[in-house]
Length: 91
Image 1 (cartoon, rainbow, N blue to C red):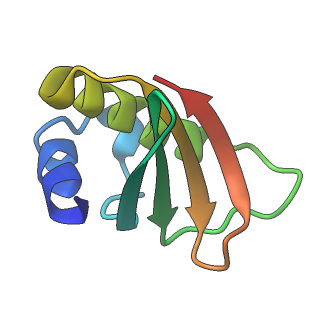
Image 2: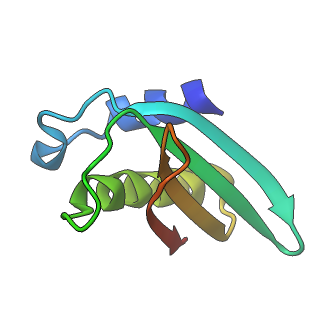
């Protein structure tokens, strides 16, 4: 999953990704009831209480990838290597 997602992301970079690429360390997806649950681990670690725009960007691209490639639904969590939640969203 990690390589597939990073390949997709690499081909969909925008100005919003300047200075933070490559940030994805790992991608894990598992089935939970009727939907998928994903955790994307990233290399950056924004200080608590600061903007989460980098994490939201990763979640946005992840959601686009899942819809385009798998046409499924689920929830994604973007976390630091230390498992601190940056952002979570649905796709």
